[in-house]
Amino acid sequence: MNKKKVLIIDDDARNIFALSATLKSKSYECVSSQGAPEALDLLKTDIEIDAILIDMMMPEMDGYEAIPLIKALENRKETLVLAVTAQAMVGDKEKCLQAGADGYISKPIDVDQLLLLLDKKR
Image (cartoon, rainbow, N blue to C red; front, side, top):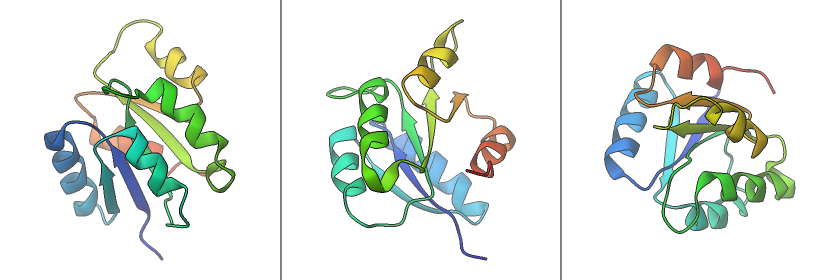
């Protein structure tokens, strides 16, 4: 079985480090980007990415703006995109899903919930 490759998009290097370490310990391969514009450039290539974890609150371009752009890429229409946010207010999940995310997880991240979302069949 091939390892799933996850792209982590987050402007905070500590979050990238923690998520990468957690996912690598669960046999996921991780690549990262500290901003949505950089991630979009990467996603326009033919690099294999099985899932994307995107922080919703970033400077320059937030997840709400980036997700529709990711989903508009012909080679990424079926890629699993999970919104990751510290915002856990009523309506935030719906707002993330409305932006095009396939799932939502709030910080601090529940690893078991994250693994369930990542294993979701597309």
